[in-house]
Image 1 (cartoon, rainbow over the protein chains, first blue to last red):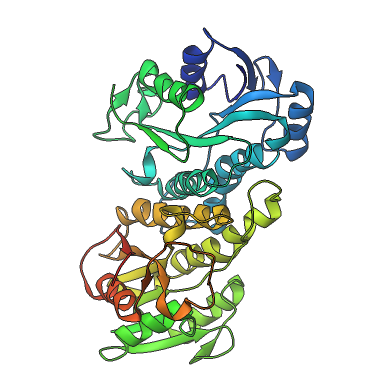
Image 2 (image 1 turned 135 degrees about the vertical axis):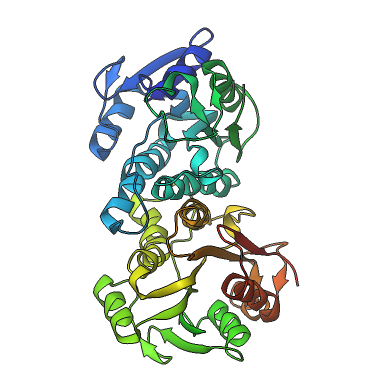
Length: 201
Length: 201
């Protein structure tokens, strides 16, 4: 398959890349590195990316950032960071991607653990994750031409243990291999409308 | 208890009102009717509402609308209607409501069935619902002063059977009483971080 992987240079994207690259042609997209440099939060840049790449068999997104902080005292602008920087770019990848996705292709979005196993300060991220998981469930039943859509919702990665030290008390750390398997299932499997959680392994 | 009920004149709000009014002082808020008329989508109006009402023991929201239509061909502006008109007003009720909510009080938001049992055309609404459910889960663990937060996620109401005829094939219709019980549990019970689904009754 020919696969666009957006966020390929992040921790999660690297896990997806390692799982898929041995068997597929990957166009690795990053903000400042990778095969293509794209600011995926900018709709024009996203559209240019699709035009440059052309037809693909799968679109995989492993992007997103947002606000972390207490709910009490949070502004709506802070809340919206998760919507604007995690939810919307991934929604736009779908809405703009139909014409570039071959029949039977797939979209794979990335949410995360915080809407099922929250941490203090993670409410805005939990909302963005819930929106992504809800969207793939809702969209899956009406995708045209056999196109599938799923999300991968990983726990904290082992490779990010130091980066997030202290923020996820009691959370499991999962291996790149375990996370990669979820992307493999989403891209190479047959299920749709699923949230592939990665809570161990 | 003294309870602000936003969206009190809608179908879902009416079910909540009927369940809570016999035992509590309800300030029924509607767009054009009720005890107070407030455009809850307007942040200034929302803030004015809180200032006028003062301290309360519970804030219940039963509002929200958004775009219904196929994912293929949907614009990001259409997708955002669910975010702007269902998610954000309810988030703002929480973010702006802390100083008006008494110790041990509660926020109750309303999502809906579409992120767990989707219908064609419902993907944008499913995203908004998922965000609401994710937010209450995430926010619940860090609410100050014993404040609780939950969502109620009802199936289609029996009273809305004609309004939505044909759009929810195979979906159950639930009674006002069953929906009201969920709001009663959210306001008068002790749980927090829960999505109270109403799928039968």
